Structure formats: C-alpha cells, structure tokens
Length: 256
Ligand code: ADP
Ligand code: MG
Ligand code: MG
Image (cartoon, rainbow, N blue to C red; front, top):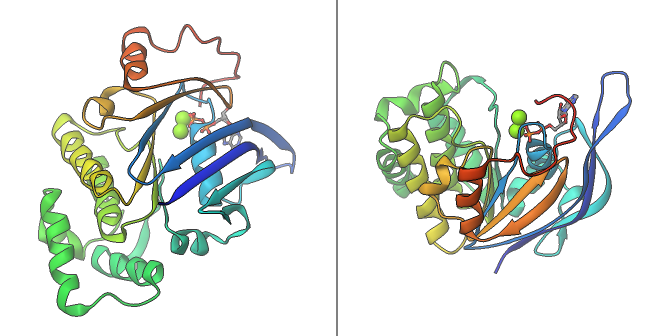
C-alpha cells in the first residue's frame, strides 16, 4: 500500500532579491492510499507552500526534513519523476498550455506517467467516460488547456486528469475555490470515486469547510503559521465550520 511520508518539513520561499523567507516550520504528515486528509487553515498559513514543495516548484527551497513516497526520496526527484512515481498535484492557479488540446494533453500526461502510450482501442472510451461522469461536453476535449476555462472547467479538467492518471497520492490545492454548488458536487463525486478505488490517497487542501460536506476526510489537520496546530477526525472540520480559525492565535503577516 502506498504512503506519502512528510517528516519535519521546513521550507522557505525564495524572494526576488535572493533572500529566503521561512514559511513551513516543521510539518509531519503521513497519507496512505485509500485515505482522505484535509489540510485546513487561514489564508497565508502556508498550505499552498506545502503543495508546491511536494510538487517541486523551483521558487521554494527545502531547508530541512524529508518527503518520501513508498520510501523513495521525493525531494531528490525532478518534477517529471514525481509524476511518474505516482504523485498528482492540482495547483491553486493552473497554468495555460497554449496550442495543446485537452485530448492531447491528457494522452501525453498518461504516456509520461505510465511510461507507455495508452492503448488506442480503450483510451478513447476511457477519456469519454471520465468526461461524461464530470458532466463535460465532448467538444471540451478539443479546447486548449486552461485557455479561457471558467473556474468550474479548470477544476473538472483536474479531476478528469485525476481519474485517468490513477495516481498513488493526489494533492488538491483549493479544488473547491470558485465553484458553484453543482460544480462542487460533481467535482467532489469525482474525488470520492478516485478515493473509493482504495488505490489513491487524497490530500485535500482548503480554506473553506464547504467541500468537506461532500468529501468526507478521515483526518483533518489545522495549519497555522506554517505548522500543524491541531489534528482530528471529521468532527474537527465541523467545529471549524462553526468556529472558524479565530481561536488559533494567528501571528502571521498579511494574508495571502
Ligand atoms: P496559503 O496557501 O495557506 O494561503 P501560502 O503558502 O500561499 O499560504 O503562503 C504562505 C506565506 O508565504 C504567506 O505569508 C505568503 O505571503 C508567503 N509567500 C508565499 N509565496 C510567496 C512568494 N512567492 N513571495 C513572497 N511571499 C510568499
Ligand atoms: Mg492563499
Ligand atoms: Mg493557498
């Protein structure tokens, strides 16, 4: 069974002048296949920094600790190697890929992750099925990736990738932001389908409790000032929904 193990992770962001600004001050977290973990916290608490660090974004410097996937050192891997190892990272601000259609992008991603091209005979059906389940028009496959996508289309596209790539661990950063209730439900059902296969562990990063009504986390971790300050089960998400983050002392700088 796959597991992502984060130990005492310390991360700084590289500022334009070359200075390092410490953001994560020692994060410990283990996510196993079939589990859903929610990381919740106020704006600017470092949630996206955690996601970018796992993804290997060059703007973030790891100053201490470790991240391993089934014992392999994730931090030593290139971004491509991380994807091939079974990590899937959906970012808060997905980039446009000019001139590349959704269909080509998904096929290329699948080929890169699996190390071989998907079988033509079955691939078309898989793609069509995944798009249908997310309520997407088939014509969407011919559009360029993220070009002019609405918030809902971007998120659906993320979940289509998730369903087709079948990663060991999926990190979803603010997958719920900007979604209306219908899109939220469809996207959540997609996350649940993937989780329910038992083959994928989900790390759901969110500021709001709304998505947790549809995707029930097994574990909830509260993030404040680059640290986990409280952990619990689904009941913790309910408490946060009622009480917000005010009871945690927020000593951070300006909200991001
Ligand atoms: P969250 O996702 O919880 O809102 P972030 O990880 O985006 O938090 O940000 C954590 C802190 O790091 C914030 O104080 C933010 O201003 C700072 N930060 C993140 N990225 C950068 C950056 N590229 N340059 C300067 N500060 C940054
Ligand atoms: Mg933010
Ligand atoms: Mg964020």
